[in-house]
Each structure stands twice: as C-alpha cells, then as structure tokens.
Length: 146
Image (cartoon, rainbow, N blue to C red; front, top):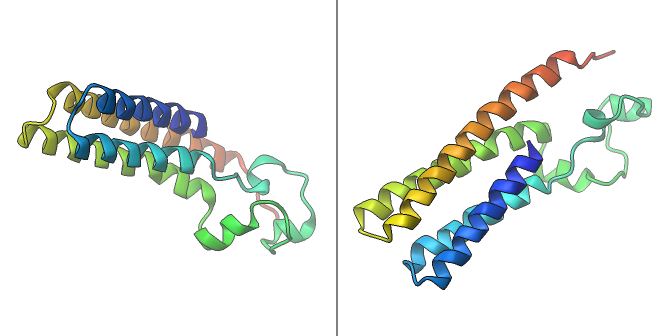
C-alpha cells in the first residue's frame, strides 16, 4: 500500500510540474502539488513494529511505549493503528482529486489537467480498495496473545 501511495504521489507531482511548465491554471497545479505531498507524507509514516515483526518484547506487545523509532508518530496519531490511517489516505486523496476534476471542468481550467486529475483520483480509489482488501487479510492472519 505504501509503495502505491508513493508511486501515485510521484505521478501527481509530475502532473504538478507539467501544469506549471505548460502554463496551466496555477490554482489547480498547486492543489495537485498539495495532494502529492499528502500522498508522499503518508507513504513515509513508519509502520508499527508489531505489524512487521512478531518477535517483539513483551512490553511492546502490550502496547507500552518504548523509545523506539516511530513512537513520535504514535503520539501524533493517538491509539489508532498506523495501518488505519494509511488505509484512509488513498480515499481522501481520491476525493480531493475528483473534486478538483469537477471544479476544473466547471471553471473551464485546462481540460487535459482536469482529466488527469480524474484518472489519478480513480487510481487512488482503486489503490484504496486494493489496500483495504489486503489490510483486512493481514489483520485476520495476525494472532493476538494476552
């Protein structure tokens, strides 16, 4: 999922650069840049250690904060698992890009940029569906011990 978010974020960043280079509407290009930053930032959020490795200390399994890398992200996101935030991100970016598509068509912005926003919005939606299906399978395989 993170690799898809990174790849799509780079694609939106390329769209931003193309919009700037070809003189497209600045508001649309810069909002594409913001969407690219969100996508790349979410892809950069580190995974929880418990999601990656079953061989953790007993304190980490109980959810206690240990001073490991990534604990600052735990404080920012609260008790919600990082995976849940990453699973929501593609749908958020998809919604933003699809709203930009509608606005761009309504305000007579560059049609090619508007339709690329549509295509990338659909791609983010599909990535979110694929990530949700894979995330659900991963969670059902995980065995919890008390």
